[in-house]
Amino acid sequence: MFLWGTATASYQIEGAATEDGRGASVWDTFTRQPGRVRDGHTGDVACDHYHRWSEDVTLLAGLGVNSYRFSISWPRVQPDGRGPVNERGLDFYDRLVDALCAEGIVPAATLFHWDLPQALEDRGGWLARDTAHRLADYTAVVAERLADRVPLWITLNEPFVHMAFGYGLGTHAPGHTLFMDALPVAHHQLLGHGLAVQALRTAGAERVLLTNNCTPVWPASASPEDARAAEAYDTLHNRLFNDPVLLGSYPDLSAYELDGIDAVRDGDLEIIAQPLDGLGVNYYTPTRIAAPSGTLPLPWEDAGVTGHPTTAFGWPVVPDGLRELLVGLRARYGDALPPVYVTENGCSLADEPGPDGVVDDQARVAFLDGHIRALGAAMAEGVDVRGYYVWSLLDNFEWAEGFTQRFGLVHVDFPTQKRTPKASYHWLRDHITTRPAPWNGD
Ligand code: FCB
Image (cartoon, rainbow, N blue to C red; front, side, top):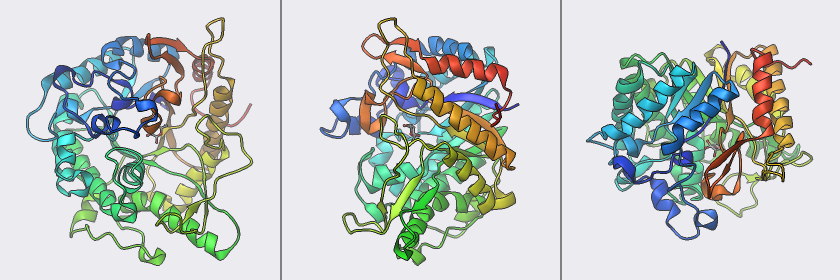
C-alpha cells in the first residue's frame, strides 16, 4: 500500500509549551532571544494542536490520507532530556496514536525534529557525544509505549539542516555560528540515529527510517571552480548524511579542504550503518552553487536558481528536481538504497480566505500535481518509492520565519485557531481517491 500522508512537527504545531510537565526546548529559549525569529513569534501556542488534536485527526480523515507523520517532543516526554519520564507527555501521543489507528491512518513518528531539551543543550547539545546516548534512552522510552501501534519510525529529521542552521549559521536554535566547526554535530546526530535504531529494533519497531533533506546540486557554470564548489556542497549537504548510513563510510572531506570529522571513534560507523527499512527524503528545491567569493568562511556560495516560479519563501519551484534527485540517489547508491519515502514536500504561499471564505491556493495545487507527477516519473525509472507526505497539514510556526510562511493544506487563523481546508486539501483528497499511487500519465 502506497502511503499518502501529511507531515508536521511538535514545536511547529503543538503549543502548550509549559503544560502537563513539558520541559523547555532549545526553541523555547531561542524564540525568546530578541531578533532571532521574525516578529518575535514563538511556538508557545502555535496551532494549539495539543488541545485540538482530535479536530486535526478529523481533518486528516476528511483528507483521506492513509498515513500521518508527526514528531514527538522530547522535552514533553523527558523534561530534562535524561532521567525521569513525564507520563502525561507520553499520554498525549498515546491518545493521538489511538485516534489515528481508529481512523485507519498509519502513524509515522519522528523522534527528533529539532526541539532538543534545553537541559541537554546546557550540557553541550549535539556538540557533545553524550547527547547521542540520551537520544537512544529517550527513544527506548517512547518505543516501549508506542511501538505496538506505530509501525513507521523516523529517528531524526534533516540532520543537515539542524547542523547547518542551528550550529553553523545560527539562524535556527540553538543559534551557534560555528561554520565548518559544526561538523561534530553531524557525527553525533548520526551516532544518535544508529543508537536509536538499536533501541527501536529492541522494542520491535516494524519499519525504521532516517529522514534527510536532499537537494540536487547544480554548478552555476561550466568552470572548474564552480564544479568543484558544487561537489563540495553536494558532499556536505547530501553525502555526509547518506554515505555513512547507506555505505558505512564518510565521504572524503579532505578533497575540499575541510577537516575530517575528528569526533569519529572505532565502532561508530558500524552503529550508524545498521540496515534501514527506508530512507526518508525531504525535497523542496534544487541548489545552484558557485565558487566562494569569501563573504562567508565556506567553500562555496549559493548562486540561486533562476528562471522558475518561486514560493512565498522565494524557493524556486522545480518539480523535475524531485525526479532528478531520486534517480540520482538510486544511481549513486544502487542496491544500498532502501525504499524511499518522500517524508516532506510542499510550498508556502500567502494564503488568506477570500470574501466567500474560500482559500483558493491554485499555485499549491499546481505544485503538488507537478511534484507527484515527478515522483511517478522517478518510479517509472525504477526508484522504489513507498510514500509521499505533504508538508504540511496545517499552516504552522515556520522556525525563523514565525507564522509568516503558510505551508498548510489547511489554513489556520492564528488568533482564533479556526481551521479552513484550502482548495489544495480538496484537490489532494480527490487525487488520492482516484489514484492508488503517483504516476505521471494523464
Ligand atoms: C523542512 C523542515 C520542516 C519545515 C519545512 C518547510 O526543512 O523539516 O520542519 O519547516 O522545511
